[in-house]
Image (cartoon, rainbow, N blue to C red; front, side, top):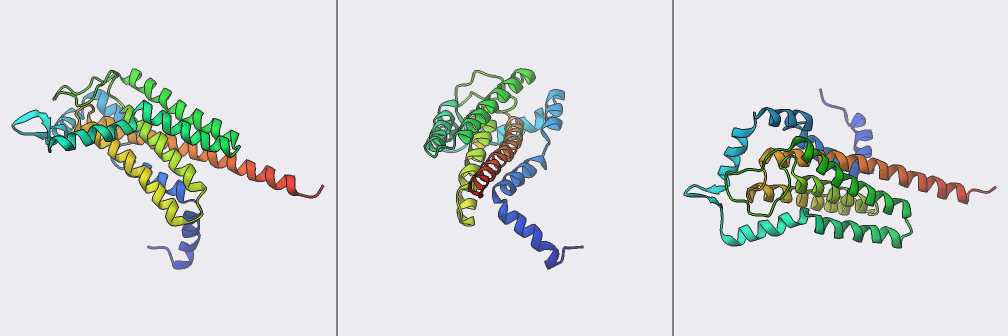
Length: 245
């Protein structure tokens, strides 16, 4: 039985006030519909996902020569360009540039928090890779240089951590709801494209990418909650300073 118009109003108003959070939650729930991270990790350890992973990887390869991804050479080059958006160098520059923005605004708490959350995401990704120690796919030559374990996808996880967190922060300072949705849509699109490029280039199993999306989105949501607490505290302190004594 559906909600009446009157019952829907509070929900609609809440979504409008929390468009950043609702968008991140939507992405997390979307990924969670396929696998929760813990359950997916359990299936990977058991080897239950190997056939599915292999089938998806082979679908993206030429039937006559599985060493070659589908599509022309320029598409492969574009995939390498996209996958670089989830690399350490690009994410570091992007994070530092955003931290510089908050530094110029004298939002020192947000600057430190941003650096800490992204840095913490990198550490969490590295620890997860070490703990699961899943071998990389050997079905086809890798289209990108790799040196770490496979599960979860570090590029996918860190793209989610970085771009979703930064997108939510930027959206917070925008008043127009359409601009908020636009910024968050870009952040989600880049995150998804990075993950797809990892599978297309044959450097990750598809379940590695799904796990990275889920873990990174969850981390971004937790970070956003922390940001909202910081901003709320700043507003409270600012209001108290203006009150007559």
